[in-house]
Amino acid sequence: MRYVILAVVAAALGAGVWWYLRGPDLPPPPVLPAEVTYICRESGELLRLPRQPTPAVNPRTGRATLVQALWCAACQRWYPEPPPQARERMPAAPLCPRHGTALQETAEP
Ligand SMILES: [Zn+2]
Image (cartoon, rainbow, N blue to C red; front, side, top):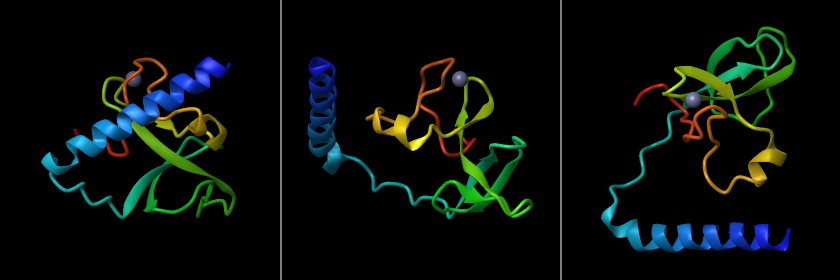
């Protein structure tokens, strides 16, 4: 277990150093869109709503069942974001469970 933690820390440090060194060459980060896609954990319905903490309230049901939806370009489908406990174990972006590729906030390339 210790080795796993060390490996994660080392990977995070390496990514941080790489990011720091790469930083000056990169264009400014894109402005995050004000609206993001949410998926309802009850119905699976997709909604475009202003960015907000999750679980967000589904305006149709009044219940906090919305989590952010993340797009896999290979699957051509949306996946619900992983729960916060799972996110803590992922130093990088959430990955597609089928392809292992990074999921995106938008369906655009
Ligand atoms: Zn996929």
